[in-house]
Length: 313
Ligand code: R5P
Image (cartoon, rainbow, N blue to C red; front, side, top):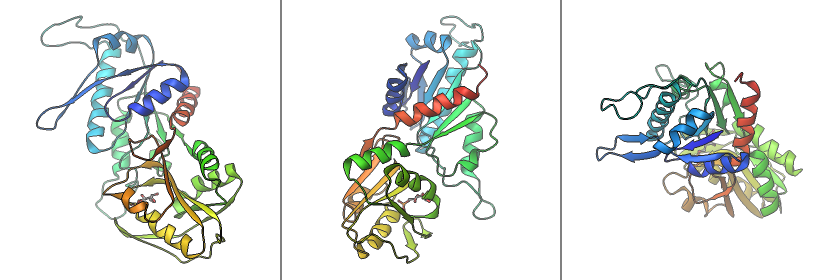
C-alpha cells in the first residue's frame, strides 16, 4: 500500500505510513497568484499508484482543502484507470485500468458541524461534501467526526476511527486526571470513553450556543473540589466552550483544569485566550497546531485496517 498526501495532512500521512510500514509520497501542490490551486502527481510516484492500492490522507479544511482533495482524487483515479491523455502527447496516452483501490483518509472533516438543516433553506454541508468525495474514491476513513450519523448510507463504505485511546494514554501519563468532563452532550460518548480508559470520575455539562462566540452552560454541581480535571471535546475552535466550562470547574474548586481535543482548530487567538483559563491544552496532529502532543497515526491506521475488512478487493 502507498500513502499519499498533499499540502495539509503530511504529519498524519507520515504517521500512518510509519504505523503500517507503508511508503509515503507527497503530491506536488502549488497555488497560482489568483489563489487557485494546482496539484500534480510526480512522475516517480505514478508507477507505485498503479501497482498498489493507495490511501490519500487529506483534510477538507480550510475550503481550499476540499478543492485540493478533489483534484488529488481526480488525478489518482486518472492514473489508476489509465487515462493519461494530454494535449501535448507526452508519455503514454492510455494504459490499462488497474481497478478499484483508492481510499481517502480524512483527519479533520471540515463542515462536520453543519450536519443537519438547523433552519429551513440551509444546505447540509457535511453531506454535500461527503457525496462529492465519495464519488471519487472506493472508501473513506474519518477521524473523530463530530457526528458520524451524517455519513450514514454514503455510496462507499466509511470507517469511523477515534484517537480517544491515545488521548486517554497521553492524559494519564501527563496529568493523571481525577475527573473527565464533557463540555456538552455531544461529547459524552468520547469523553466517557476517556474516563473509562483512565478509570476516573466523569460528568457532563449542558451547553447552549447563542452565537459562534457566545455559549452558556446550565448550572450543575460537579464533584471536583481539589481535583485535577480534563475537559474532553472533539474540537476546540474559538475556545469559548472550554473557557466557560473551565469557569464552572474553577468556581467549584478544581485545582487544575486541562483541555484536550482531537482537532485543534484554535481560531482567532484561541490558544492565547485558553491559557488564561486552563493549565494545559492538548490536541492531536489531525490539523497542524501549536498543541499537537497526541499522535493521530495509530487511530488512522485502525480505521484503514477496519475498512479493509469490509472491502472486496
Ligand atoms: C460543538 O458541539 C463541538 O463539539 C465543540 O464543542 C465546539 O465546536 C467548540 O467550539 P468553540 O471552541 O468555538 O466553543
